[in-house]
Length: 147
Image (cartoon, rainbow, N blue to C red; front, side, top):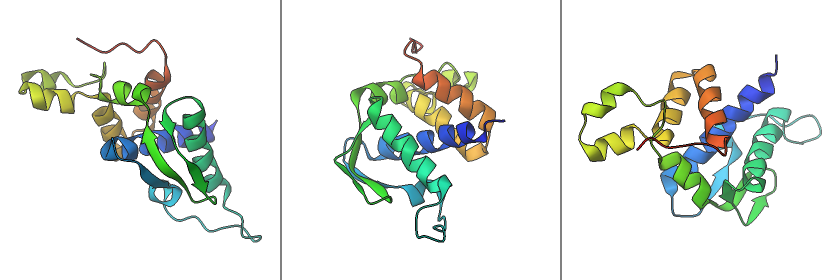
């Protein structure tokens, strides 16, 4: 089983949601805030888990989902912000949004039915399979929002 891929989906989603919460401000995105504290190895280097999370954030930048000015050692991305591509995808209506959302007022429906909210709920619930499905949809270039 490729457990590192589940970690990637969780780390990428948590990083994007942290930036979404701060949007449009630039923030310092700390790895420890996303995955908790990880002890360095015997040589003082970050753990593999820590390196994987930082790698996921850098991959997001390379693929055009976020921008940052530089890294703060192995600890964080400085001056990080979502790109337009990520903002549009996260704020779009999710095909996974619950049908109960349809009965809500438009402003609440927009927030509750957003892709970001669906990701947030999957993270909160610890539902790794739903999170993986949502993350794959988010990264799919053919993502289409509901009208």
